[in-house]
Length: 271
Image (cartoon, rainbow, N blue to C red; front, side, top):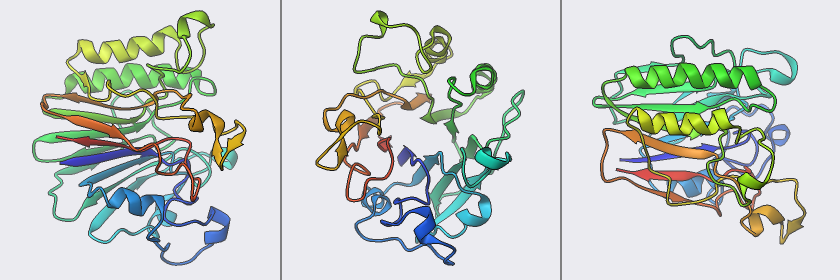
């Protein structure tokens, strides 16, 4: 099986084509162009595509169609800047021929009002796709999320794949020990990563470094210099339990330019 995880930084902006969300407007079906980032993803023939930070409600999400796949969207219930079409959100595309026993959108002891979780129950495996809160703007929410998620994952008896943007920087292009702790590498955030290993999870993404690059840096050949020079953070993960012989690959060039879309790169897991 092949699974993609990707923080798209807005599914309506240059993911299915080269248009922004405003340019797409309200067309019934959003066109999927051959040279789009999503079509490059589809060339990898994934069975499951887990997207985070979709910034798209369920009604808008129905306009994004991939032949041979069905989709499930979770949305923010906030208002204004934290409304469903402006903030957070997750979705999963899965091939039509794969049997699904259940789709869930929450876990015990965590009130997810921002569409951060989708859980895909397959016959022998549970895929938990998450867009974890950023502790810079959601400090208390991040703590609650990590506590509840650790408890939930520890309760599962099936094979489990945890994927998504954890907003935790296990690796950075700079030496974290020489700077003050900051959002993404606070001690309790890095402890969460360690705690996942304690309950039996293995980091399938440990052999690569970065999945996010600061998009605000000066552009070189149309690419933010941080990404051009590969000065990034590792924020996106696959952590697996009960599954052997896995491999991962980061596709840094997808979404990097032509068109420039997300500030994260997609990651492929095969098992």
